[in-house]
Image (cartoon, rainbow, N blue to C red):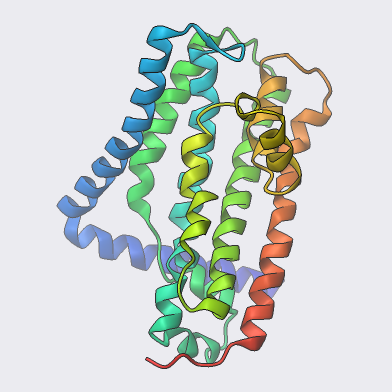
Length: 265
């Protein structure tokens, strides 16, 4: 218990150091945050113009799609903000910086997590919140405690899922030294195709995103419950099941650490 408390304090200290460093260049920080807002704004425009021509996509209205996309965008942005160290881990391996991590009296995961924070992603989070508020106001959803819990579990499960993907990407770097660009399909790519409910892409895609990389557990199925297209309380906690993806990701990470040999500097 003392170790957990100590790790939490250290992690908060890492965040504080990164935040103070960013605030030394406030203009750069706010411009970067604005840039992140504008990047995801392009995706929003794609949805907006599509619905200028069509009233529904596979039975989902404009406000319902925005609700779906805003939650997934928030999940991805949170994971990228606080697990950025794993996303840029290949550079750490190539430069031999991971060697120093191994000789320190702290866990490797905690140190990699604390090595980099992308707090400029607050720009994306802001856009996600704006779209979420709009989607909620126009969807006519009758909110109750279970639906609010569903949204909370979606964010928690989705952030865990994307963090697992970043850890998986980092674990592969032990064997390749270079980051695999194909992994961007499952991280940045998911942010793009996740703007629509997974049912839109067909049954095979729905099965893939249910049982292999469980995006649907944090996006499509809980959305059905919020929109009252499903009534089973199971859909409330279903997003938490997506956290299982952390286990194979961590297993690959531990395997990579055991087999790691210095790549030099």
